[in-house]
Amino acid sequence: MNLALKEIKYYKMKYVLIAAIIFLLAFLVLFVSSLAQGLGKDNISFIEHMDGKYFVVSEDADNNLLNAPLDKEDVKVLKDFNIPLVQMQPIKIQNNDKFLLTTISKLHALPKDGDVALDVHLNKSYDLKDKLNIVDSEENLRISDFEKFQMYSHMPVGLVNQATYNKVVPHEAINTAIINQHVLDNVSIKDLKQNLKHSKIITPEDAMKAIPSYEAEQMPLNLMVFFLFLISAIVITVFFYIITIQKTTEYGILKAIGTSHKKLIFKLIQEVFIIVIFSVSLAIIIITAINNFMPPGMPFYLNNNLIMILAGLFLFVSFIGVMLSIVKVLKIDPIEAIGGE
Image (tube, rainbow, N blue to C red; front, side):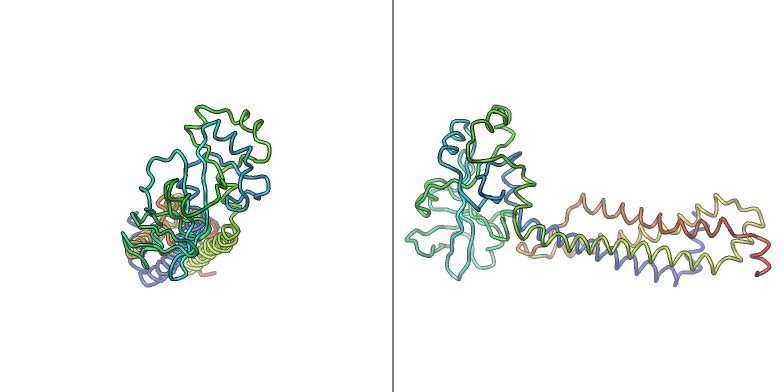
């Protein structure tokens, strides 16, 4: 460790430059990943919020919860099995704002009559206890709460109780049903499938993929993250390989005085890990500080598990990148290096 630290201190300008480049790459990876997570939450957070193990949708819905209502016969079957039902209807309010009016049967924590719990994306335009005037309806809703992560397909969700929903939306169409863990403890999926005639059972992942904007947004951002990792690997490989070539004579002298290959390789790996850990840690600190100042409606979500995975990937990429330098060090002949040939 002392040898690695002494070398970093001696060639500090070179190592500061590579640390700055790795920091910028790590910051970009974390920022783009958090942006992808945030945009993903704007599409799928309400599906996650419902905490369903499976969902029941119409066979004509293409797995999308909003595309087609459930058949009335199947709704009766679901009621007999005591499965929570979900009704969803996009509605327009003043200022041309829209949200997805939603109610879930058998959910006890719903607002009282006339109240709605909205996603925080609308708290810039409205305050608690504000009245929402519904277009083409005589009904008004009062905002009782703002909640995080209640978005579906970039549309804020507004939760109401069954009585309020029935006043605003005249029809009784059911969009989907939630098969949660409580249902699974009492109902056999096989039995349920046999009783459903015009509906199918899908996973939350199927429901997420059916949202048109979800994969279209995630794919380019994830591809960008992949190429940033690739660029990081190339930068680290090239930098340490050039440094190794420049210090061929020094490595030759170290070999000549009896320094083992193991010690030289360990020194190289230590240098890389010190630089990368410092740079990535700084990037994490800054991205966390930025996240604390982000407004609630901003599509930016910092996932702690993802941060740890990305940090680990940076260390792995760095380790792969230093392999070429290690091979070069192993091939250095002390006599040729000292002689300058």
